[in-house]
Length: 327
Image 1 (cartoon, one colour):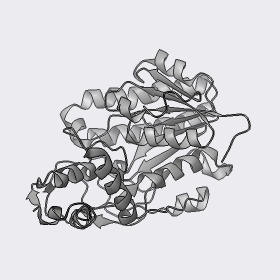
Image 2: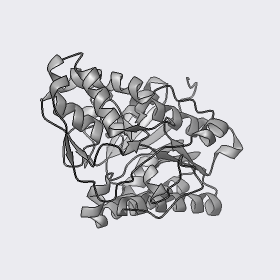
Image 3: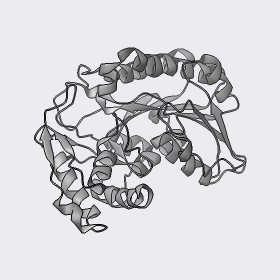
Image 4: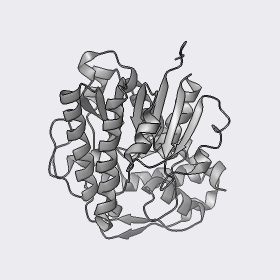
């Protein structure tokens, strides 16, 4: 989709996993992209391919500083707000920093976007908002009590976005991401996501540790489905689509045992020894939701969402990417 006059998108957290994939996609689609990042969890190497692109601009700054947000949003038509401190365990260990980034930083960005009169503010919400709600599949208007400081911060984002829509007329759309994975997702560090972490361990013939018996299930969502949702949320002309939140998922669930089976199968095509690497089972993790499955009906109906990648489809692509980039 091209632009005769190029629209400008501010992507906060643009050096992160999801942000850098969005940056790549929208530059290729004919937009100008401004990236705001403080590199606390994002990586410069995720941006190296864009630095010489005349339509790309990097602002090194922090969403906790209102002046950085104001500078970044100047001239932007749209904001795709991805900057956040992820990870339930991190938020349990350090709730104050998680709140500073995810709540105060979010409020700074909303305020800057309102004052700059951006057309629409699309933000990363989270499936953790469903908390202790038992029902499956998860539908947007039925949530439970949050189970971690991280989940509280992401729920507060939704409340603030709704108030800014009602009070100031800022168009907002929240995307509740479900276990996103894919190329550029960091396998390193204490808070690495499960898929890149397990891939790296298998490639090194190390046994990954599954929390619990492996029967917890997740609605694993490939990055290209997430890119599609961001584009639809940003560009939708349906008046019923805005000022709402949407599950961003594939709409299917697989257990961690399923995940390990697929990873071994796809990785052993590159290295047959990987299929013999054993798995270790550990304790369940505090704050973990046992089962997660999204209803994507609302996104299909209001936004025309049509996810193309199942877990298996996405894993095949992701595994190949990791094989070529981690070796």
